[in-house]
Image (tube, rainbow, N blue to C red; front, side, top):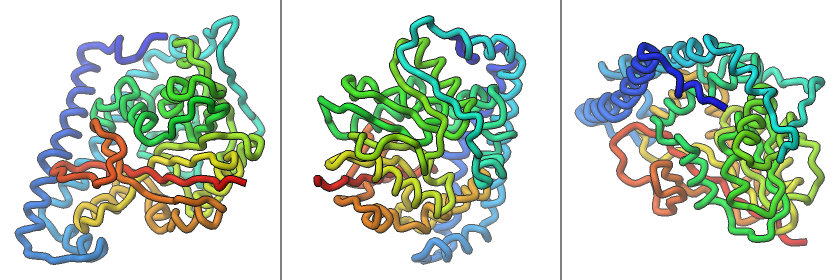
Length: 358
């Protein structure tokens, strides 16, 4: 399979580089300036709400907020144009599969997508992720820029697999809920070579792309279109149930139902691991994270922060529940915290739990 970025014209490459540069300067220059402006007010806010009130009154905040939203819109325009101009070739790639595939793809045309999933253009992506086969390519392209090119080659997700997931030399089944176009699932066969790896997602376009890319590289993964709240996978059959960046895109009731389903799937002694966001305890930073929800069309972001997932996991029968900070740059799981990072960054954290032995 060819990668769209391998065939960008000079103009397309220049546009991508401009958006990437704008995003970097927003994070490492505008945000520190905003913090400095906040500090100059002498505010001593101790809550996110109080810090947010001061933040919204700062002269620089409208620029900070506007730049994040505008660069995101620019990103999708650049990615969309690059992908759609190559629609015929890219569509062909989705069906050019080996005669004897290593993995499988199971789509469910009768699956009813929930309203909370279809009613919003999440991340401001026009048509979101589920609407068209090309939307998966567009999202794959855009996600690289969102991660500031620091997840090329699945670096971020490989770090998660290496540092957050348990060592299980005899694992038999691993399930990745909300696998999207496969970026979170692809490192799992290397981590668990003895296991069947299953990626589950609501969106058929993402699953088609995930399957085609896995087959093109000879990686055995089974992809299934299903709701993460009711996967259809047998109970007590999985060594690990995982998901990355998926819970914050669900309302609180769906978050709870997904955790309950994950607990059902786990074998006694099995492990749950979800990579998500967690507030840092820095009121100003956390206020900018809270308001990222509005700036980036993340309607359920606040549901994640408003859900006590330690309690949810406990009620689902899981034990040893914890949140641990995660450094996406190089360290992965980082029990000592996120460290002193002057730039704006997502406060990644790993939710971990265990299903008790029978």
